[in-house]
Length: 138
Image (cartoon, rainbow, N blue to C red):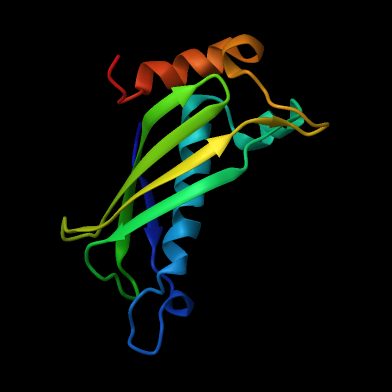
């Protein structure tokens, strides 16, 4: 999988010229959408199939600042996948190669009409691809 690149916009910075911490969550979403598209399961196609994937948990560890015009490379990896749960890890690195943030997001899979989706049974190809990329040890 290729990293997603985000160029820090001026409006994403605070009065000190540093990227506001809330933007990292948005960048995670951008990278996640990119990741799913590369995987062959774009989010809009999942929604067309009646599946939504709400974020149920987010954790960010800020290690360095980013500022206007920084090019942030975001690598997404699968930390864990279960039948109805997915945990993704993110590493955000600036153009100088400095790690600025490590993060995770946890997601469930639901039917738009209600109820959990069992990826293993209902979307076995998607589940298998996620499992193959999983960093989880058996």
